[in-house]
Length: 108
Image 1 (cartoon, rainbow, N blue to C red):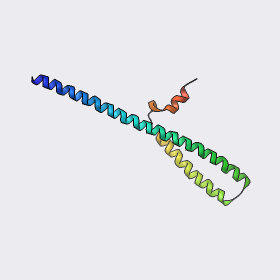
Image 2: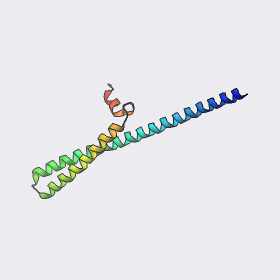
Image 3: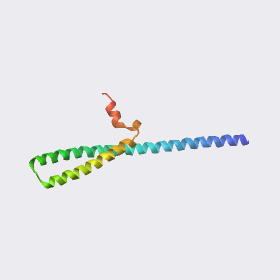
Image 4: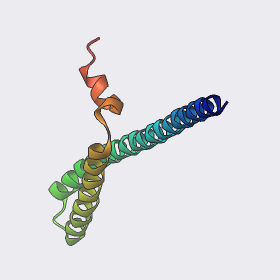
């Protein structure tokens, strides 16, 4: 009787271990998904920053104004912050979850 009880306890702990592993895996997947959304948003921000840079370059050709210098300095700060966040998020992202790289590697 004691052996049967011991076997049931081992099975319970195995089931509990599997459930814990599943929940840990789900947490990792959610974290990776959050990182993907963050990277997507940062990429969109980067595209918008590039458009603003082109506008600044055009305005520099037209004007030689101190206001443009301030805009360029602000642009540098914002773009550097965006690049740092992007690099940080990419380093945290596991390669198996990187759909951006997966999309590049696929040949249609």
